[in-house]
Structures are given as structure tokens and as C-alpha cells.
Length: 68
Image 1: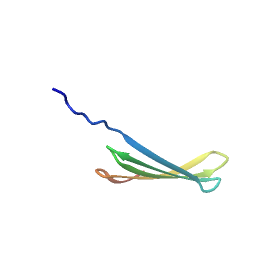
Image 2: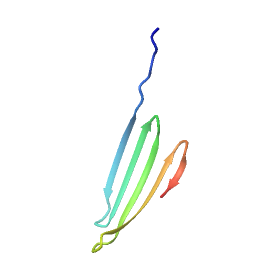
Image 3: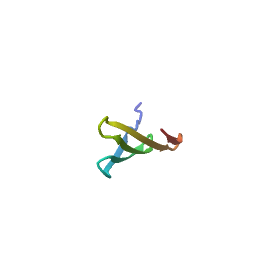
Image 4: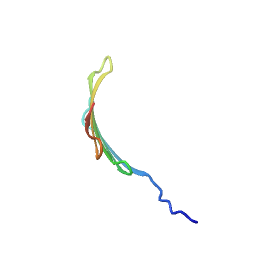
């Protein structure tokens, strides 16, 4: 008896935009078995110490909205 199995996987799309010397925006989308949309904004607070801050938000069909 043969069993039909279907493969699984995801396709990931990414985009990174350097807004300025201190600001970067990253967007990624994952489509497939687990879909996800993610947006991360990074800002350098102090060039001398290298201190950075970031804000990340994501959305998934079963998880809803998330913020870090």
C-alpha cells in the first residue's frame, strides 16, 4: 500500500532599508506551513558607545500580534 505524503516548507521574503546612518528598517514575511510577518526598526542611540535600541513587531495567524 502506497501512502501519499505532501512535502512541507516555507518561503521567506526579506527587505532591509537603511534610512540613515543611525536607522535601519527590516521587514520579513514567511509564507507556508507557518506564516509570519515581522517588522524590526533599529536605531543607534550613541555612536561612541555603540548603544542601540530596537523595536520589533510580528504577526502570525495563530499567535496574533507580538511586540518586543
